[in-house]
Length: 309
Image (cartoon, rainbow, N blue to C red; front, top):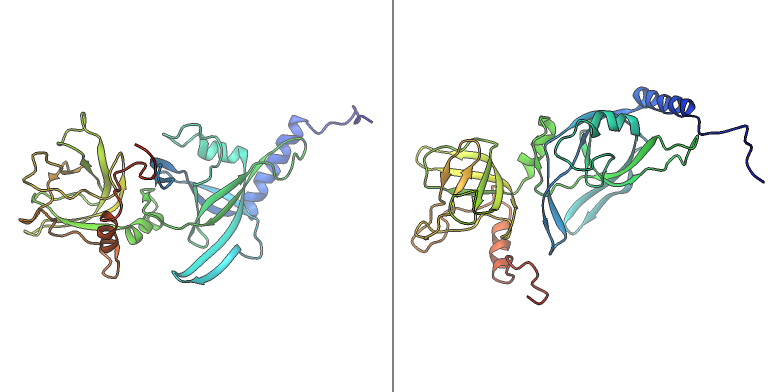
């Protein structure tokens, strides 16, 4: 038996009214959040990981479905310490997302809907959530239309991503948690705090040599010490993701180049050719010990160490 030809749910005016009512309800009963679209900088085919940065942020309202508190696995005490696995479901209308975020975002291809890996900063709880799944069909075809997205998100776990959103309460996450390395350099010219610093794989010539590693300046100590602290180093084209140790006696100079200050300097080495100072700012961290031990076991420059060349 066919459906009645006298009734239709696909009436554009009613669909628009329904979406407007949902939008107004979210504005009244929703939460103020900040949406951070992910910008992919590189990809590690071996570990199936990406290096991301977040330099754009858009305030928008969303409805929090979890009325009795966060869901997920809760708090777990494991061998690596306390893990907080809160999960939340956010609802946003497609029209609001398109007008506030999609049309405003720059430098992101085919960005028409929320994506896995994007972040949501919840201002009420001051917590950052990572979108794990985007459900575009809930509620299911009300009035033969899909006016909302439901975003399943989990509490974000920081992993050396770069933040430059303009929101201090968000950007401070990087400054507090990023892996940091400190180097003694030969130049007395100061690096600028917060600027991007690059190391080229060959001579200091961006036109003919690709970038090996990129980081951001978190500290500069002059007065004859000339120590620069770099956070969030990530691999751009090759290498193991940390700045290469090099000797000033090398025929090819590999300088740390500040992209704003234009300061270019070699890392100072001793007579044996090893870096004088190279450590994590956290005195309790074992990053350097693991890195040195790992370099003696695995060749991180190999793109596929488990297959044939």
